[in-house]
Image (tube, rainbow, N blue to C red):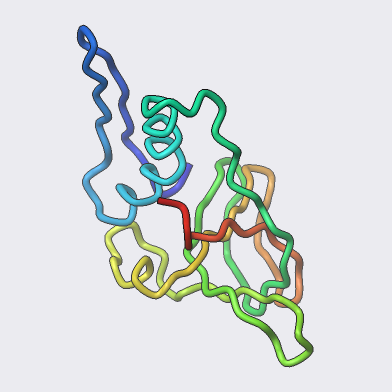
Length: 131
């Protein structure tokens, strides 16, 4: 997955350990995708509902090589036609904290996906209300 390496989990006695990556965006993405659900289970929710993935129109080109899942940061908004649309926040580097501060969703591109053309449908995971 990108961003989000390296990631570690372990347990010593009753203590759970989550080793998150060093770059700020990588930490946030891995927290939302792995740690959040684990914490919900540890707090007593045996089967937390998975985060919904919505199909929306991507307004901009996204460059991506197939081979791994990417969580690109995006801005979900209503288009002029009233339909939901998403645009990437710009530079998607894992050290670019601005990409997370501007984002209200992840654009989830699976390992089989390559470049996305403007107007294509993509999956998004809304950030609001995740925590």
